[in-house]
Image (cartoon, rainbow over all chains, first blue to last red; front, side, top):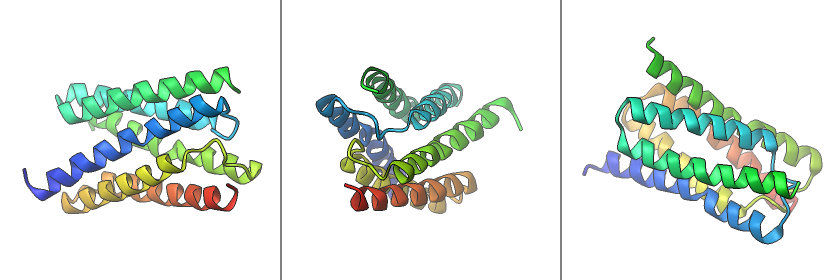
Length: 84
Length: 84
């Protein structure tokens, strides 16, 4: 694997796992007031479209990264609605 | 432009502009307690690497989307540190 592809994979892992500590924080604090609902909705729609793009272009890394991120954003949306 | 590429562009615009309402919210509320610092740091590093990937692969859409997102995440990090 060349360096450029490796950097792409590391970037994908980081921007996907980034939402894990946010889910943990919202879960623990039971507070989501400072989280923007508009951000979560835009991210959910955007990441859903990225997933479609991944399927259409048969790009497994894009599919995997975006399916995981999509689930995390849905969990955050649920917590936002529950603890608003 | 075919449908797949168009969906990719729309996805990119959505996941980039998603952080604008979050910046506005943090700015207005002067509160960032519910935002995860770990999320912001992981996103900043990940998006920086996506930008490098964009330059190396000479992909203008990846460069543009990630430079804008990177600046928005840096602003959020600044607000997080200021209003923690």
